[in-house]
Length: 190
Image 1 (tube, rainbow, N blue to C red):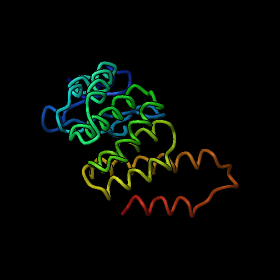
Image 2: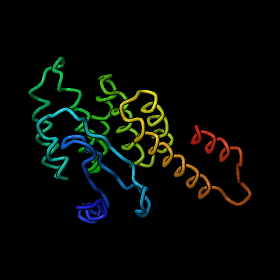
Image 3: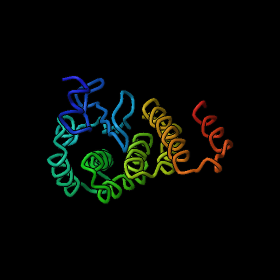
């Protein structure tokens, strides 16, 4: 199944494998009509934890149930705890349950484990809620934190494009701020 078929199947939200069976990227279309390259990308953790197989197949409701069960059975020092938090952030973001997504995205960032992935996913959740400035900060932290560098860079560029579009839509003809646009474009070139 190609990406476009996945998007149609999941009503604008698609899941597809990248390298290995459990190394996948999940795309979330936010706000605007879908066009190629116009989706924010979430990154589930590549460690096997029970429930991630459901993220891979697009069954996010089942994934979060299984992952929450696994989380309840883990201790603070369990090495699978951080991957579970990362995957719960992905699952709830895909379900657009932003209250739960925020809880797990914050916990995955606070865990300090796989920081690039954790910041990237929290950025996607923020972008999905329309908080492009917060998303931009998280995507930059993801690039700096490593682990999701290329994906975070694409998400950062998409966020900057959305910020420019939002600012130009919110301003009236007399309110044009060329300095804001120039500084946004400079950031995306770095």
